[in-house]
Amino acid sequence: MGGRDATMVLLDENGIRCDGRKVDEPRRIMIKAGGLKNADGSAYIEFGDNKILVGVFGPRDVHPKHMSNTDTGILRVRYHMVPFSVGERKNPAPSRREIEISKVIKEALEPAVMLDKFPRTAVDVFIEVLQADGGTRCAALSAASVALADAGIPMRDMVAACAAGKVADTVVLDVNNEEDQAGQADMPIGYMPNLEKITLLQLDGVLTSEEYKKCVQVGVDGCKIVYDIQKKALQDKYFGNGGD
Ligand code: ADP
Image (cartoon, rainbow, N blue to C red; front, top):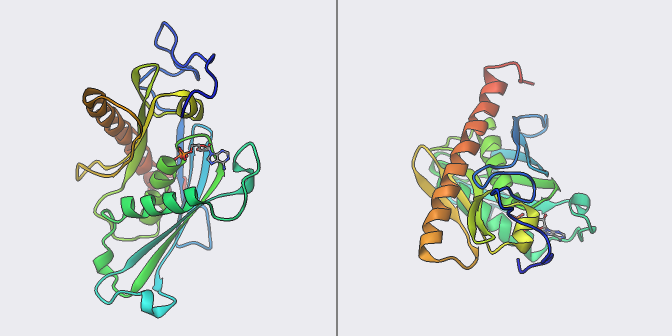
């Protein structure tokens, strides 16, 4: 954030954004359930120009053993960006940002997963960001939910995620990379539509209390759009002809 390109028009006089979208329009979203034969569950998502692959393994034994919990299963999440996922080569060593995003995605998924059903074991979620274009944590979280469902992990609901934000003094849905860099606020939201519960809410930027409420509403509406696409991905694999 902070005006990288002050000359860019983020919102024109007709309410059209820099990538041609309306204020309440998400980027193109495509989700495929399955695809990785060595994983217990997997999913691939394209969210605008973000391209992310998720593999889920488990429930399986925990190593080292002392990390296991006799009362409940544990969820472990690794969010990783491949070096060519951004314009300038990313250092392959885990960055502070990747460690933070791994943690927030894990905490956003935990309320959805019935961890008490598989004590002493772990479920591992590996997220590989192949191409990043703003909003990778939301796209990764949405794909991780589908991959967990694909692995047959018992869940209370799926977490769908989408960001809202403030651009040119206007609340918009699904902030892209340019808007994130030059806009005023970015609020990633993870939401379980069936349970009507928010499991991720972050805010980078400054909002009035009215704008804050509007962002939450717009973001939750975006999550509902993502949720329909997540369900369709699973339906296509298990009941349609998209199976493999
Ligand atoms: P999110 O991807 O969830 O929006 P951030 O707000 O931290 O997370 O990042 C915004 C965008 O900045 C990313 O989606 C990516 O396109 C870009 N980005 C992140 N890390 C790097 C990096 N090391 N080099 C170049 N661009 C990056």
